[in-house]
Amino acid sequence: MLSGNRLTSLPESFSECHHLELLRLANNRLEHIPQLLFQLPKLRWVALAANPCCPFPPSKSNANSNNAKQFHDRNSTLVSKIGEGASGEVWSMLHEGSRYACKQYTTHSVGSDGAPMNELY
Image (cartoon, rainbow, N blue to C red; front, side, top):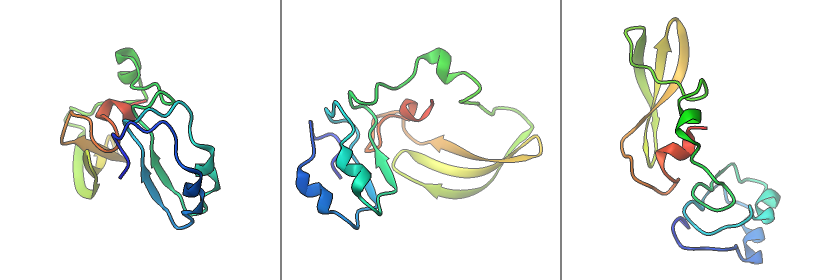
């Protein structure tokens, strides 16, 4: 895990990581998204939150828009846990007859993927 290491770049040798699938680079000092990441054939998930190249979290007004819905009513039911990660659990949820994935944060602090607000945009 490379999160929180004050990195400003990645070495060119990173382009040889052909089997790398997940990379956590949150909370560093990356000014630009390293272009060599786009050359890695198996890379499927990158955490870049809290770097200068990703100027999020959004403002509070954006976090409360339709893109980040909050479900606190009787029409919502958590069905089953379908996964968990560094910052919380993901649940299958029914809301007014439709199925959604709902992330329930277990922390408000900054983790290896950034802060919870980094995901609300």
